[in-house]
Image (cartoon, rainbow, N blue to C red; front, top):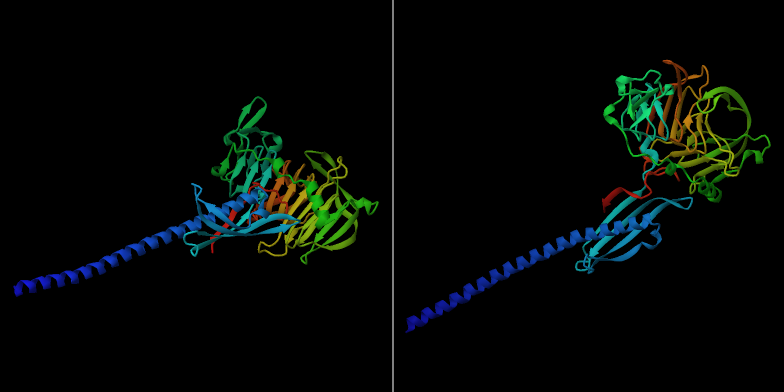
Length: 470
C-alpha cells in the first residue's frame, strides 16, 4: 500500500511541476502573442498617422485652391470612410505674401490616431503654381527659327513652326499643318521636309525643319492649343496693387510737357533710378506689321527724376507710359508698361541695354510686361544679355529691321511670351542683313515655381513642389 501511495504522490508532484511549467510557457506564449498584437496595432497606427497627416495636407491644398486658407489651420478630426472618428491632425501654414497676394505656401501637418495618440507623424509640403517660365517661348502665331538659334527649353506656338536651329527640348505646335509663305523661307516649297504644293500654297507639317540642326523626334503636332488669353495679365489689378504698395509712375507728360516715357535703371542695391525722357532720335526701320517707318527708340535727352527703393513687400512697378528698362535686378521684381487711362493708346517696352541679375543663386528674377510690344532697340549692345520673363500682351517680342545694323549675339535666360511673330534677325536670300548673328535662349528653372509677383501661371491650381516627412 505504501508503494502505491508513494507512486501516487510522485505523479501528483510531476503533475504540479509540469503543470506549472506548462502554465509558465503558456503565459510566455500568450505574452509574446499579445506583444506581437500590440506591436502590429502600433505599426498600423504608425501607418494610419501618416495617412491622417496626408489627409490634412490634401485638406489644406483644397483650402488653398479655394481661397479658404484663413479657416483651415488648427486641430481637426479625421473620420474613416464609414464615418467613425479615427484620429486627428494639427495643421500649420505660412504663405509668402507680396502686394497682399499669396505667392506660394508652406504647410506642416501632424497626424495621430485616437487609440495611440502618442504615435505621431508630421509632413511638410511646399506649394506653388507652375509659371510660364517652364517654356522658353510661348507664341500665338507662325514662326521661323533660324539656323543660328539654339533653344534650351520647351518651344510652343499656336501657329506653325519652321525650326532650322537647334532644339534640346520639345517643339510643339497646335497646327497639324500650315501654309508656309515666303516670309518663312518657303518661296520654293521644301518638299523634302514633308511639305507639299497645294494650288498656290506651300502646305507644311505643324513643325518641320530644312536642316540637320534640330531634333525631329522632339517635334509634337498637333498639340493642344495654349490659351494665350490666359497668359495675359490683368493690368488693372496690377496698377491698383502698384498704387497701394509698390511703385506707380503716371504718364510722363503729366510731369513734363515734353515727356515721352520713362527710362528705369535697376540697381543692385534694390533701388531704381527713374529718368524722364524728353527727346528721342529717329531710326529708319521695317517690320511686317508696319512696313517701312521711323522708330523713335534712341534716347537723345533725359533727366533723373527720382531714385526710389523697390518695396520688399511689394516689388511691383507699374508705368503708365512707354518704357526703357535696364540694369541689375535685386530680388524678384515685376515691371509693367501700360496706358489704362486712354483706351486708344497702347504702350511699348524698348530694350536698349542689358538686363542682368545681381546674384546667380536664384534669389533674383524679373517679369517684364508690355501692353503692346517688347522690342529690342537699334542701339542694343553687340552682345546682349537679357534675363527674365518677357511678355508682349497684344503685340510682339522682336527687333525691327534696321539696314546694316548687325549685332553679334543675343543671349536670353528666361522666357518669351508673344502674341505676335517673334523675330530678332532679318535675312535677304541667305544673307543676314540686320539683327543678331547668333541667338541662344534657355529657361530659368528658378522662376518656374518661384517667379516674381503676378507672373502668368500655366495652371491656376497649386501643385506640390516639395514633400518631406519631418
